[in-house]
Image (cartoon, rainbow, N blue to C red; front, side, top):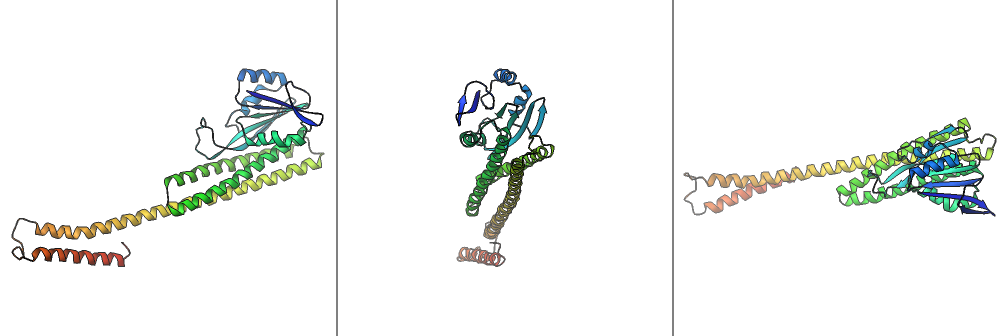
Amino acid sequence: MMIQIYQKINEKITEIKELEKDCWVNISPPFNMDRLEEFAKEIEIPFSFIVDCIDLYERSRYEKVEDAKLIVINTPILNEYQDIDDQASYITVPVGIVLLPDKIVTINSLPNPMIEWFEKNTIKNLPPADRTMFILKIFERNVNYFLHYLREINKRIGLIEKDLHKTAQNEDLNKLLQIQKSLVYFVNDLRANEMVMLKIQRTDFLGIYENQEARDFLQDIMIDNSQAMEMANVYSNILNGTMDFFNSIISNNLNIVVSRLTSVTIILMIPTIIASFFGMNVPLPFSHDSFSFIGIIVISVLISGLLTFWFRMKKWL
């Protein structure tokens, strides 16, 4: 288990070993449940807060138990974990934020770029003591990662479409299906995150009613979140149309192939029937004519040629 503790010392963000006032605690996998339970008692938060946050299927929500406030949001990550039985290209995982009177705790169900970026960049200029702005910055970075991955998804769709225009392969269609599943996750979790932020704003869960700057910042984040949700919906609709279009093309191509094969079968059937008639072991016309074999071949070729010409006129071949 990785428990990292940060505090601003001498105008620098420094990793420390013991809990101090106005520190930031970041918990990441691998987890040891016994150690987590001890740590929960040490920082005086309900153990259920931590258990809920490491559940990969936890929904976005918030709650308060005594002086501890829990906020759970979902953040996007690239699906590169073999132990996750999900074929989506991108998935969403919960991140828990526990707000205490003298410290802030983040709990990651899986390593995610949002917290990693926050740890390497934002924390340098934002002291953990400013806990309200700290949480709002997490919200902002989370929305930015949704937007970032949505742009990547749009690029992927464009590249796959180019490949499908050349040749329709099952592999390309499977990639589109994986992206489609990712967009479903994005739409659902962006909506859930938006509902959480709306409730936080309405109930003043973070106590920012008197702070106009923080209120405006939260409003901007919510606008960006709505934009990300609109983008996800648009890309999802475009992708659905694209898949329907290429499914129609594949079906149409299959019909053309079957039609051509049927036409070829009919054309080849004529010489076969003629040869069958003249191959009977009974008296037949022209059986004693020395040119009968050539005549039969000519008639067969002529009829087959006429059928081929007619099928081409009908565009069946």
